[in-house]
Amino acid sequence: MAAELHVELVAADRSVWSGEATLVVARTTSGDIGVMPGHQPLLGVLESGPVTIRTSDGGTVVAAVHGGFISFADNKLSLLAEIAELADEIDVQRAERALERAKSDTDAAAERRADVRLRAVAAH
Image (cartoon, rainbow, N blue to C red; front, side, top):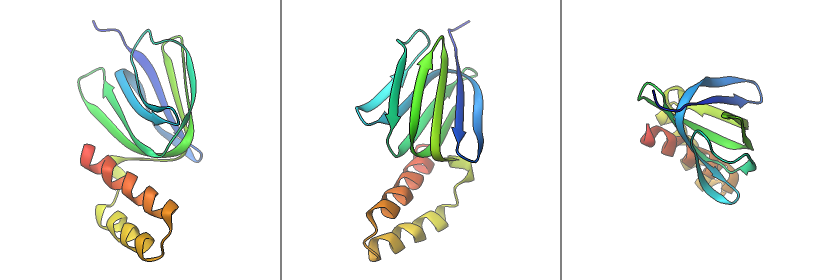
């Protein structure tokens, strides 16, 4: 049996995903990071970007994450996000409309959020 880590992806308003994984890739202020079982303890600040979770059963979970923190110790990984949506939950047409609206309003933050949501769906 492969080594596993326990993952909790939590948004400010709900628990988004919880389970066992073999690899988690997330974007931090220091760059992209991959966490596998046995990784050194870490604490970092999450940037907006897709988070990819390779589950123990061979599946993949992708979420759009907007800000927050990542921490890892004792094979327990916590992703505490301001906003997080699973790729399966994202309405692509709505995200595309939001991206166009943000571009026309020159709202860089809204444009980034919409872009991250679309990248999470594409990675899924």
